[in-house]
Amino acid sequence: MRIATAIVLGTTLSLAAALSAAQAQSIGASAKAGTALAAAPSGAPVAATTGCANPNALGVARTVEIDTTGGPGFGFEHFKQHDFLRPGEVVLTFDDGPWPVNTPAVLAALASHCSKATFFPIGKHSVWHPDILKQVAAGGHTIGNHTWSHVDLSKKSVDEAKDEIEKGISAVRMALGAQQAPFFRFPALKHPPELVAYLGERGVAMFSTDLDSFDFTMRKPEQVIAKVMQKLKTHGKGIVLMHDFQQATAKALPELLVQLKANGYKLVHMKAKEPLQSLAAYDAVMAKDAAVGIQTVSSRPTSAVVRSVD
Image (cartoon, rainbow, N blue to C red; front, top):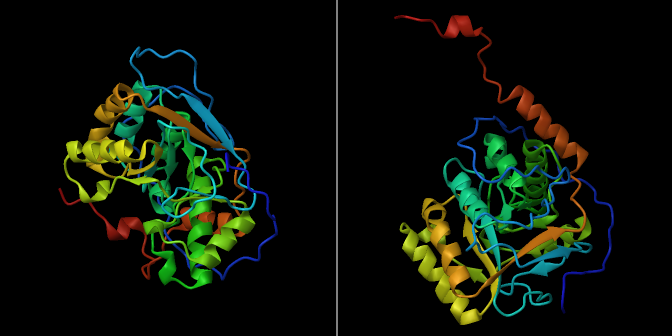
């Protein structure tokens, strides 16, 4: 089929089992990177500007809008139904952020090429580094979700796995200050059928990959570049999976974008037709955890715990 339009149900869900408290502590952010574009209030990407200071920029050749009704799946490694890329077209996706130094470096490289990507952040990382996640949105990129703590959902009960998904969604919403795109990638690309059905009911599109860089196994930027370019040469197009959490990937991206341009590849940017609505019960849990933090047995005031000795 030619583009992402899946037409199935939109039933209401019953919530999964009650969540245990978890810490959601903001640690601050790293150096600012990217462009001066404002974040879209829905978490959807901001439209790219027509001009680009870099005459050799890769840019964005085409933007596609995805209707996530019914939970369509993308990425031929697992989902075969929707093939929307033309020969030579590439979608760049990044998992596991936001992370200090590495995510801002990825954003700076993309900004220098006036290019856009899709990010699948981890919930914990998002509440640790909300300012970095906001930089992703400010750069006009699309933000999806990658669970609360990146556990293998196939090893969890259905209720535990739903908690992981929904808490991750609420964590990103809280960190971003806006709703994200209804885009989701399973950790380790493991797709339990019950959770595929659940995300379909939630109207969340699922993303596998066409070309997995396996950059998490690499320490040198040139290895990342060589792997991605070799797989693109073999397949001719594809959704590329990388990790903005990885230092080698952050260092590789400037040259990788140059090589994509030099070899005639065209970048496609994905955005969602509608934002994803987080669930109020999970939003409340995240807000409580952020305000209270994890409580200890001690009730002594700080002045009784810490004192200056020098």
